[in-house]
Length: 161
Ligand code: SF4
Image (cartoon, rainbow, N blue to C red; front, side, top):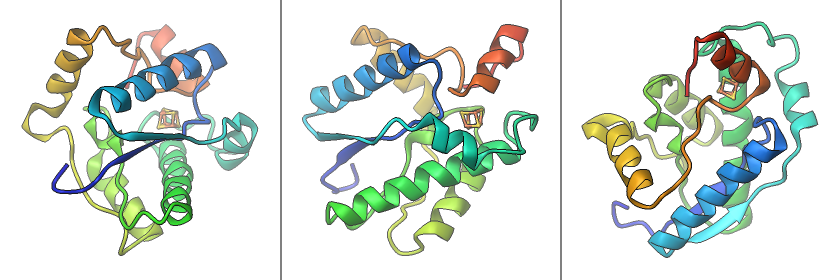
Protein backbone atom coordinates (compact mmCIF):
# COMPACT_ATOMS: atom_id res chain seq x y z
CA UNK A 1 0.00 0.00 0.00
CA UNK A 2 1.49 3.34 -1.07
CA UNK A 3 4.94 1.75 -1.13
CA UNK A 4 4.78 0.47 2.46
CA UNK A 5 5.50 -3.08 3.50
CA UNK A 6 2.32 -3.95 5.43
CA UNK A 7 1.75 -5.96 8.60
CA UNK A 8 -1.83 -6.63 9.74
CA UNK A 9 -2.63 -6.10 13.44
CA UNK A 10 -5.93 -7.37 14.82
CA UNK A 11 -6.81 -5.87 18.18
CA UNK A 12 -10.53 -5.83 18.94
CA UNK A 13 -11.28 -6.58 22.59
CA UNK A 14 -14.48 -4.60 22.06
CA UNK A 15 -16.07 -7.47 20.10
CA UNK A 16 -18.67 -9.67 21.77
CA UNK A 17 -19.54 -12.47 21.91
CA UNK A 18 -16.26 -14.40 21.70
CA UNK A 19 -17.59 -16.46 18.76
CA UNK A 20 -18.03 -13.25 16.75
CA UNK A 21 -14.49 -12.19 17.69
CA UNK A 22 -13.13 -15.54 16.46
CA UNK A 23 -15.06 -15.23 13.20
CA UNK A 24 -13.66 -11.76 12.48
CA UNK A 25 -10.16 -12.74 13.57
CA UNK A 26 -10.26 -15.57 11.03
CA UNK A 27 -11.34 -13.17 8.29
CA UNK A 28 -8.53 -10.73 9.13
CA UNK A 29 -5.98 -13.55 9.14
CA UNK A 30 -7.31 -14.79 5.79
CA UNK A 31 -7.13 -11.34 4.22
CA UNK A 32 -3.49 -11.05 5.30
CA UNK A 33 -2.78 -14.51 3.91
CA UNK A 34 -4.43 -13.62 0.57
CA UNK A 35 -2.30 -10.46 0.35
CA UNK A 36 0.84 -12.22 1.57
CA UNK A 37 1.38 -9.93 4.55
CA UNK A 38 2.31 -10.75 8.16
CA UNK A 39 -0.48 -10.97 10.72
CA UNK A 40 -0.30 -10.12 14.42
CA UNK A 41 -3.17 -10.74 16.85
CA UNK A 42 -3.45 -8.67 20.01
CA UNK A 43 -4.80 -9.99 23.31
CA UNK A 44 -8.55 -10.37 23.69
CA UNK A 45 -9.15 -8.49 26.95
CA UNK A 46 -12.81 -7.50 26.94
CA UNK A 47 -12.65 -6.60 30.66
CA UNK A 48 -9.97 -3.97 29.98
CA UNK A 49 -12.05 -2.57 27.16
CA UNK A 50 -15.16 -2.39 29.36
CA UNK A 51 -13.14 -0.48 31.98
CA UNK A 52 -11.97 1.93 29.29
CA UNK A 53 -15.52 2.86 28.24
CA UNK A 54 -17.00 2.74 31.77
CA UNK A 55 -19.57 5.49 32.24
CA UNK A 56 -20.12 5.81 28.48
CA UNK A 57 -22.20 2.68 27.99
CA UNK A 58 -25.33 4.64 27.14
CA UNK A 59 -23.66 6.87 24.55
CA UNK A 60 -25.13 6.61 21.05
CA UNK A 61 -23.12 4.93 18.33
CA UNK A 62 -20.63 7.45 16.99
CA UNK A 63 -20.52 9.31 20.33
CA UNK A 64 -18.00 9.45 23.17
CA UNK A 65 -18.00 5.70 23.83
CA UNK A 66 -16.82 5.15 20.27
CA UNK A 67 -14.14 7.84 20.60
CA UNK A 68 -12.72 6.06 23.65
CA UNK A 69 -12.99 2.75 21.84
CA UNK A 70 -10.99 4.16 18.90
CA UNK A 71 -8.41 5.62 21.30
CA UNK A 72 -8.02 2.32 23.16
CA UNK A 73 -7.43 0.30 20.01
CA UNK A 74 -5.25 2.85 18.24
CA UNK A 75 -3.03 3.16 21.33
CA UNK A 76 -2.55 -0.61 21.19
CA UNK A 77 -1.70 -0.38 17.48
CA UNK A 78 0.87 2.33 18.26
CA UNK A 79 2.39 0.08 20.95
CA UNK A 80 2.48 -2.89 18.60
CA UNK A 81 4.21 -0.82 15.91
CA UNK A 82 6.82 0.37 18.44
CA UNK A 83 7.41 -3.16 19.75
CA UNK A 84 7.95 -4.52 16.23
CA UNK A 85 10.09 -1.67 14.91
CA UNK A 86 7.35 -0.55 12.52
CA UNK A 87 7.77 3.11 11.58
CA UNK A 88 4.16 4.00 10.69
CA UNK A 89 0.67 2.70 11.28
CA UNK A 90 -2.90 3.45 10.28
CA UNK A 91 -6.32 1.85 10.74
CA UNK A 92 -9.00 0.17 8.64
CA UNK A 93 -11.68 1.76 10.86
CA UNK A 94 -12.21 4.61 8.40
CA UNK A 95 -13.62 2.28 5.74
CA UNK A 96 -16.99 2.10 7.50
CA UNK A 97 -19.62 4.51 6.17
CA UNK A 98 -20.88 4.70 9.78
CA UNK A 99 -17.59 6.04 11.16
CA UNK A 100 -16.25 9.58 11.05
CA UNK A 101 -12.78 9.47 9.49
CA UNK A 102 -11.95 12.95 10.81
CA UNK A 103 -12.52 11.86 14.41
CA UNK A 104 -10.50 8.66 13.95
CA UNK A 105 -7.61 10.44 12.23
CA UNK A 106 -7.48 13.15 14.91
CA UNK A 107 -7.26 10.51 17.63
CA UNK A 108 -4.53 8.66 15.75
CA UNK A 109 -2.51 11.86 15.31
CA UNK A 110 -2.91 12.73 18.99
CA UNK A 111 -1.60 9.31 20.03
CA UNK A 112 1.32 9.22 17.60
CA UNK A 113 1.83 12.49 15.67
CA UNK A 114 4.77 11.21 13.61
CA UNK A 115 3.87 7.58 13.15
CA UNK A 116 0.13 7.69 12.43
CA UNK A 117 -0.86 7.90 8.74
CA UNK A 118 -4.19 9.58 8.00
CA UNK A 119 -6.45 7.84 5.48
CA UNK A 120 -10.14 7.83 4.72
CA UNK A 121 -10.56 4.37 3.24
CA UNK A 122 -14.23 4.83 2.42
CA UNK A 123 -13.23 7.31 -0.31
CA UNK A 124 -13.25 6.10 -3.93
CA UNK A 125 -15.82 3.39 -3.17
CA UNK A 126 -13.58 1.78 -0.54
CA UNK A 127 -16.48 0.19 1.32
CA UNK A 128 -18.05 -1.14 -1.87
CA UNK A 129 -14.71 -2.59 -3.02
CA UNK A 130 -14.27 -4.30 0.37
CA UNK A 131 -17.70 -5.89 0.02
CA UNK A 132 -16.86 -7.15 -3.47
CA UNK A 133 -13.52 -8.55 -2.24
CA UNK A 134 -15.31 -10.35 0.62
CA UNK A 135 -17.92 -11.79 -1.71
CA UNK A 136 -15.29 -12.96 -4.23
CA UNK A 137 -13.31 -14.71 -1.49
CA UNK A 138 -16.27 -16.07 0.45
CA UNK A 139 -15.41 -13.99 3.54
CA UNK A 140 -17.83 -13.38 6.41
CA UNK A 141 -19.09 -9.78 6.75
CA UNK A 142 -20.03 -8.37 10.13
CA UNK A 143 -23.59 -7.24 10.84
CA UNK A 144 -22.87 -4.84 13.71
CA UNK A 145 -19.92 -2.74 14.80
CA UNK A 146 -18.64 -5.09 17.51
CA UNK A 147 -19.47 -4.28 21.13
CA UNK A 148 -22.50 -5.50 23.08
CA UNK A 149 -24.11 -2.05 22.74
CA UNK A 150 -23.86 -2.02 18.95
CA UNK A 151 -25.20 -5.58 18.93
CA UNK A 152 -28.22 -4.39 20.94
CA UNK A 153 -28.71 -1.53 18.45
CA UNK A 154 -28.60 -4.02 15.59
CA UNK A 155 -31.22 -6.15 17.31
CA UNK A 156 -33.33 -3.01 17.86
CA UNK A 157 -33.05 -2.24 14.14
CA UNK A 158 -30.69 0.76 14.37
CA UNK A 159 -27.53 -0.90 13.18
CA UNK A 160 -24.12 0.55 12.40
CA UNK A 161 -20.89 -1.10 11.26
S1 SF4 B 1 -20.12 0.91 18.50
FE1 SF4 B 1 -18.19 0.17 17.63
S2 SF4 B 1 -16.74 1.88 17.80
FE2 SF4 B 1 -18.48 2.27 19.15
S3 SF4 B 1 -17.86 1.49 21.16
FE3 SF4 B 1 -18.98 -0.14 20.13
S4 SF4 B 1 -17.41 -1.36 19.07
FE4 SF4 B 1 -16.49 0.60 19.62
